[in-house]
Amino acid sequence: MVEFPAPQGEGKVAGVVRELREDGAVLFDFNHPLAGQPVRFEVQLIGVL
Image 1 (tube, helix red, strand yellow):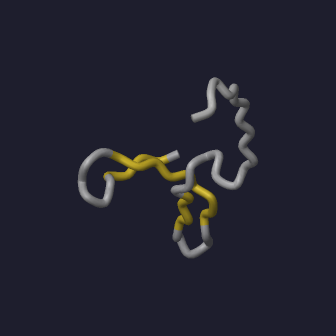
Image 2 (spheres, rainbow, N blue to C red):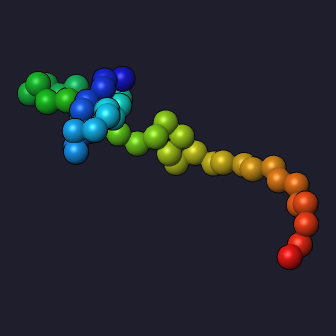
């Protein structure tokens, strides 16, 4: 994981190295680590309006 300055200069964004190419280029992934993963929520209904 590598940190970069945010585009507007406020804060930082993190990217994960996904590919190192033979020509020296590096492919970074800036998606959230859970992007594309199923998410399950458990909720409790406390009332109906």
